Image (tube, rainbow, N blue to C red; front, side, top):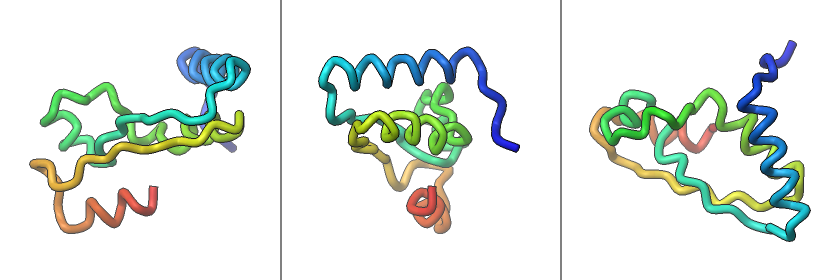
Length: 88
């Protein structure tokens, strides 16, 4: 069973659909980190790593290329953070 679809996900999916319809072919998105502690440390607590895969898939499914911007080596990162980032 997949994740529940919420209103924010519907809004993001609609935005991706409209962007594609307008001719958008590429988006640069500041994901910053997969480590929630690191995100909190740089005041990016609104970035939700647990939703990255679902949200990026919705964008890619509309034919839009995603350029993910990642910060490596933030306070709170450990030796495994980079590997977890690659696997996400």
